[in-house]
Length: 126
Image (cartoon, rainbow, N blue to C red; front, side, top):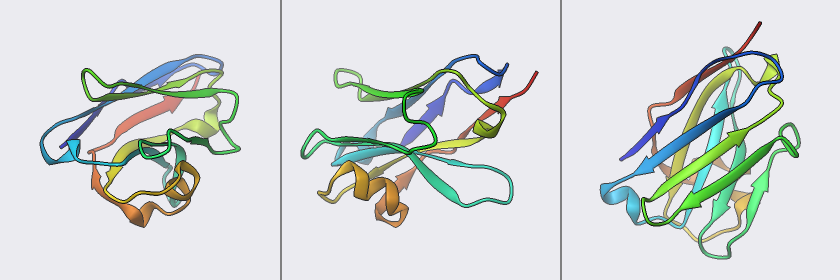
């Protein structure tokens, strides 16, 4: 099971930290990804991490503004988002996959993920 938290209403230029807590069968995974989906849009990869090779990936749209980190002791993955823009408004999902691949491939192929959280809304607006 994956549970996201930390979303909310943020002003442009502000920051938010999203959390993804894994438990149960979700602990047996090789990677974690953060995806987002705006109304009427596809669900796109934001940032991913591969436990197999330690690689991380950031989408161009968030590079330099977003940092993915993990707390292995609590099986929690964080997505720190800074300098938020209105176009960052979306439902953010974390997901886990059980295949070995790189972080970039994960983020570009969301079909590889088999476990998904319920999502958390991030709204960037003044």
